[in-house]
Image 1 (cartoon, rainbow, N blue to C red):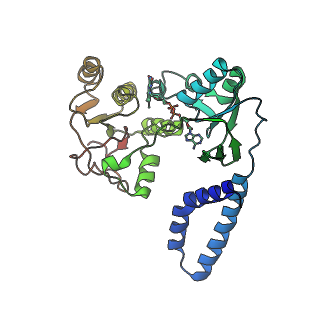
Image 2: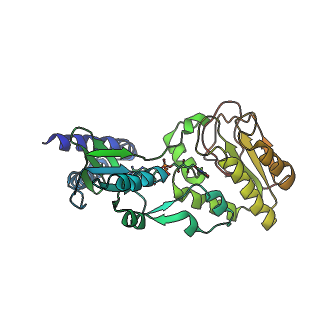
Image 3: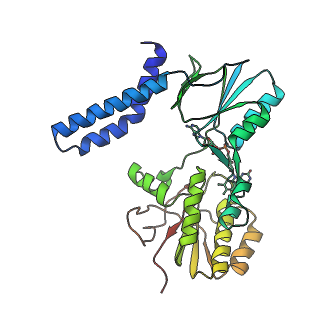
Length: 316
Ligand SMILES: Cc1cc2nc3c(=O)[nH]c(=O)nc-3n(C[C@H](O)[C@H](O)[C@H](O)COP(=O)(O)OP(=O)(O)OC[C@H]3O[C@@H](n4cnc5c(N)ncnc54)[C@H](O)[C@@H]3O)c2cc1C
């Protein structure tokens, strides 16, 4: 077996290891376990086959630069690498079919801009700027063989740019269990990592019947210091406009508003005084992801998780 083959097989098995272990635990009989194992082996073999073939991309016409991630960073890199070095052959890889901007997304939550304003085609960007776009998920890369592995096969590169963005750190709010983390991600997304989270948040806002709407502000470094403070105002504006009987509890881990303090203080105390309650130095130590209508169990240790929404029982 070639070196790259071995490497890819290892990567794939590593990636599916947790899932295999979980499935095996749940099997009730040896026969069921054997069938399950066979099915998994077949799936693994198929996935491996896909992984080990060369992806269908145009032949390189110069030194190939592969840019992983088509957010603000990756798109900028791809465009200006081509502009400043026309000899480069650039491929941008992103798992999504379209770019959606986080900047201005709070205004979209409040219906102040349309989705067209936030969302742009990767294909248009590639076409307009002379590079190639490939919609695929990157699974790993090998610096020795200079190959990027995707779910659609591998791509050879001369230079590699990694711009895949960030992940949440739920352990900072006491949520260590991976299932609970997944639940939290799907039910109460922060809208800082993937654009589809924004849809969930917008639905939650639109369907909110009234009551406590909880939003937290992390400490430390996170994307866009103003975003959670601004999001509280946008949500309050919607509730006010629709006359929803709601209170937004803005739990800030920091001891005070970290940015544009005068403006946000005025917004919380005057414009949205009936809708926003700002609580500084609010630290979350754990979150019960299974219960509905409950409050964070306590608030006394640090968190750096981006903002999330959690509807609680409506007020009397
Ligand atoms: C509400 C909000 C408001 C903001 N407002 C502003 C603002 O006004 N001004 C400002 O400068 N910044 C703002 N920001 C911050 C800004 O959005 C981020 O700094 C910026 O999006 C980071 O860009 P990025 O390219 O590094 O990462 P991302 O935008 O996260 O892009 C990463 C890309 O990589 C792709 N990707 C990840 N993993 C893979 C994989 N395995 N395979 C293929 N593709 C993959 C993802 O699909 C994604 O498209 C705001 C953020 C938020 C949340």
